Amino acid sequence: METLSPESQIQQNQNLEKPKRKYWRFALGFLGIIVIIGGGFFVWEKYLSPQAKSNRETQKNYEKYLAWEENYKKAMTEDTYGGKTPEETLQMFIEALKKEDIELASKYFVIDENMNRKKWVDRLNSIRQNDYLLIMIKDIEEKAKPDIQNRLNENDYKFVLRADDGTVGAVIDMEFNKHSGVWKIQSL
Image (cartoon, rainbow, N blue to C red; front, side):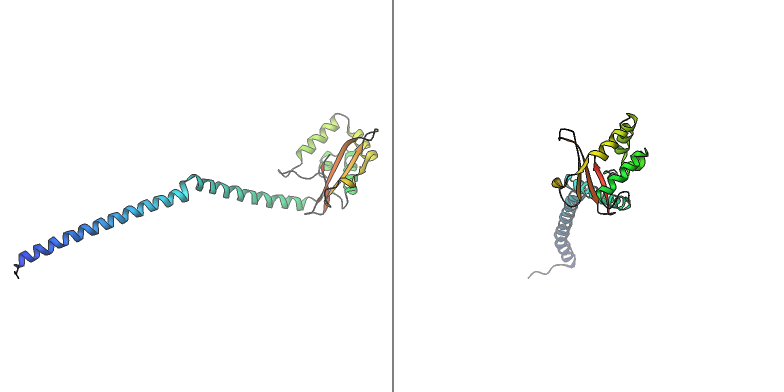
């Protein structure tokens, strides 16, 4: 066996270390590329992809719906205008119309999805301005008869106003507000 001089041994050791350094540099570089690509995919899937954007939008909409639902339930619970029976609510409505208190009369209607009754205030004001309020009151008092056969369930009640020939002229649809325990007018 040939003995190497100390300088040759150092040179040979350095030559052996160079491939090891190259290997580790390559391995670390390759690992770094994998981490960057993996991180890019993660960021894309979690934040930037159309599906991720859609998921965030769906979550926002769901949270908005939950807030709306909570406010709606609160408004329904606080909506105590109405009677314990459909007949009582209808009579209260007629009394408010007789006083021409449109604001009070509108409170006997179910609140809409915007939590107001503006459309009913507008409609009743239009009826009053066209001098049909007394006719409306008289028709309801004289012609409104319960329509038990067409009830959908125990929370639904209808009054039918029939013309002289027996045809249905109008329907007053009532709904029970289970949150406040009163009957409300759903449509007229």
